[in-house]
Structures are given as C-alpha cells and as structure tokens.
Length: 209
Image (cartoon, rainbow, N blue to C red; front, side, top):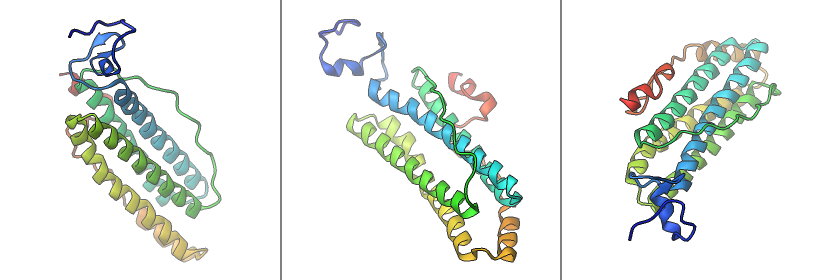
C-alpha cells in the first residue's frame, strides 16, 4: 500500500513515514522527533540555569565554584549541539523553543549544588524516556546515540552530588569553603568524545557535510 501525504484517513502508523506532509525515509516518528527537539531545549535550559548559578556564585564571591559551574554550562551547550547535529544527520528538521527564565539567586552554595544535582536527575529521567521511545519504535540509530548520554548522566549526577555533599560536610567553616573554592577553580572543559559533537560555532556544518 502507498501512503499519500495529507490523507486524513491514514492509519496511525503512517506518521512514521511522513512528517509535516513530507516523506521521511529515515523512519523517525513525529513523536520521537518532537521529543528529540525538546531535548535540545532541555540541554540549553541546563546551560542557562548553570550560567545563572555561576553568576550567583560569583556575586557571593565564590569564584572557583562559579568557574566550575561555568564549565558545567559549557558542557550542556555541547550536549545541545549533539542533539542538534544528530537531528540534522537524520535529515530531519530542528525546531527550537523558547527558554524559560531560570532563578537568579539561591540561599547558599550548598543550595546551588543541591539544585544542580536535582536538575541532573531530571535530565537523566528525560534521557531514559527518550531511550524507551527509541527502543519501542526500534529506532536503533537513536538508541545508539542515546547510549552515550546514559553513561554521561552517571558522571553528571556523581559530580554534582559530590560537590553538594562536600559543601554539606564543610557547613559554615570559612577555611573549608575557601579550600573547596580553590580546588573547584581547577576544572577544565573537556570536549565530548561524541561523533555528533562540533564546536558550537560549527554546529550543523559538519553534520550537513
């Protein structure tokens, strides 16, 4: 049987063949594509909220922690780029949504890093949801792409949890806070070892080649 775009009587599974009225030869469903595009927004919001946290840490004079969080924000930008390039590689349409406004201030560095850990747990739940969708649709290319993120989230959760627990142990000890702040200032950005990663200014360029 040949499916015809625009036919309202198409069976539900026809959505796997057409997106926006155009033939989709790579068999990504509308729902999965929508969720992949939503994940770009999730990753960019992660960048946005971590930049807000960095700004608040800077305002509180924790420059090392602010640096650590700024690096974290840079990582989230890289994650968004991976999803962006992956969608383009599948010859599908990237659609960006508006970003929500993040909070501007937190009660303390501990509250900031506890919030960062909670946010990473949310991102993990999003990656797991995407994986469930991809597996249910037998989209093994997307499953393979998401495998990298499942491993990445283990590290992201561990890093933010460790920082939060260190801060909880230190409490209000000024010397301890100063030492931790200096230690966290040494973090450096490591570019993701992912085939869909390109520096942000090249996003889409390598994917379209």
